[in-house]
Amino acid sequence: MPERAPLRVAFTNIPRRLWAGGHNYQRNLFAALHRYSPGTIAPVLFAGTRDDPGELATFPSIAAVEVVQSPAFDHAGARLLGALALGRDGPALAAFRARGIDMVFESARFFGWRLPLPAIAWFPDFQHRLLPHLFSRSAYWRRDVGFRVQIASGRHIMVSSASALGDLNRFYPGISNGVSVVRFATEPPPGLLATEPFDVIAQYGLPPRYFYLPNQFWRHKNHQIVVDALDLLKRRGLDVVVAASGSTRDAREPDLFERTTSQVRSRGLETNFKHLGMIPLDHVYALLRTSMALINPSECEGWSTTVEEAKSFGVPMILSDIDVHREQTEGSARYFGIRDAAALADHMSHVVQTSGPTIVRDLLPNLDQRVGAFVADFVRLTRDVMESRVSQTAVPDR
Image: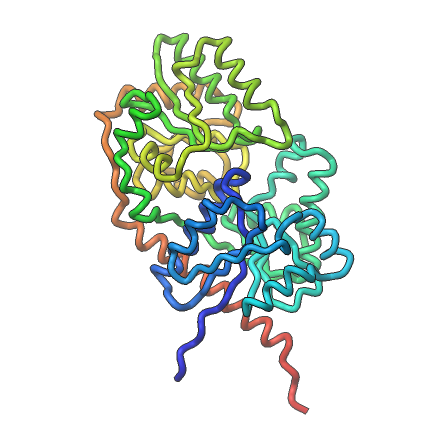
């Protein structure tokens, strides 16, 4: 039997400054596919001409990954209008055909209801339905219409958790699309773990014992509750440090970061809440591995990348008590209500009082099993979608 050729799957670039979790997700997926299922899928990453060349340059280091920059992937909003009106994004389709693409993976992109290639639509979460007050009317409907046209176009839908599956069925009842739950797991590459963690701690002027909060500064990420908890702890006489990192830009609320940091200053918490900005990924892992605990206070997640990364190293976690966090950690973390700063402060106090000296954690031995299962589920999904497409287009015997 001849060997099956790798399935050439088109992905679109997710800039890290816009969505670090999505960027890291694709990078991790590509590396995991090569390690655990080499030769089955060849990812082809399509990017716009203005996307960061330094960021894109890191992808070809992952075996079997191709990167294509094309003006067909500039101006996503205008392209969406064309895809809706004409049924297909002509320039993108031409780029796909030029690279011999077999399947398209849509993430916050729609290439048309007449796209002549099988496609998987990833719905990371349903934040606009769960937290509609955080969206302008136009942003809400842009996102909701995007989901609805993908559903109406017969896309196979991928979600990342049972919690997200429940949301899909609740908000879009009665859909007949194929739906798959693919829970991702992360395995940081060795090259990103070579940085000396204590050098990174010193570079940012952090104490040996600190909590880590690597979330982008978006309203639903709920940094406010961490500031409130730090204030409570300081009033109790406990001086602790939270190191935060990630983009400070939220297009929906441009002044959120400045208003929060102004509040930090007015409360005298400058030495307790230290925002480091957008830092290199190797520094993220270094700070995570040596922290007392990861804090993720988010109000909404589809399947948290930061939680998966903490699980990879066995980092203790203090998490908002939302369904997906319970699902993701199977009860192994500490949980607090998304408005309960006192409960968060209590958890932080307990960790401070019970944690030992600072250590550098290594990847856990069960990681291969978790990441291998993720890859197997993703490969199975792509094959099922391809086989379904073939059966739908097959001409019956006469």
